[in-house]
Image (cartoon, rainbow, N blue to C red; front, side, top):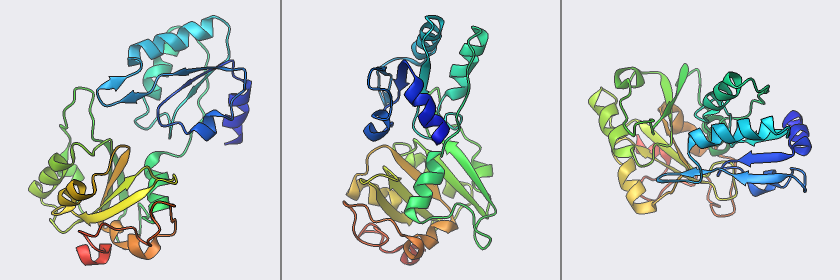
Length: 248
């Protein structure tokens, strides 16, 4: 947003995450200090508690600090944890909302998260809990007429498919995987709860990959519009699964 851009260009220090695109980072002041605090599975440049303390330290030094994140800071972005620390330490702050990964990736994949004929609600779920478990309310996630979006769920996909089918979701329920959505490296794979793991084993998508479960995925081939350079075919479905309409 213009507001985010204005703040980025005023910042003395930019504390940024792994998924912040280089083109975005280059919009900051040339003389601004850039501090990388990105996280990958089993490798964190800095622990969350250290990031919280760093933000407080920099602010109390009188510096104008921008905490730059990919997606929306309040949706699985730990933004709440960070400003909780700032509030406790008496550090003033403001939050600039952004487009969360579910919205951006779904739009670029041609998948409407809600649709009057298919889904009257949408649920965002993290597939990577703080303690490493996936102790979710599966009965709620298995309810009909909804779309469920799993963030950070690729490694937990076997658990997701097993639990959803065990709680009554049809094995034919459509599933989409969106790898590096909205970027030139975007890849989209469609299948069903029954065969999506086989697609993963064949295609080997890598994080960040978003998982979308629901009947709205059936619309993907028809509504697909974005053709990434590495994925020129319309729909960009896996050869194992075939087009989404054939994966019912």
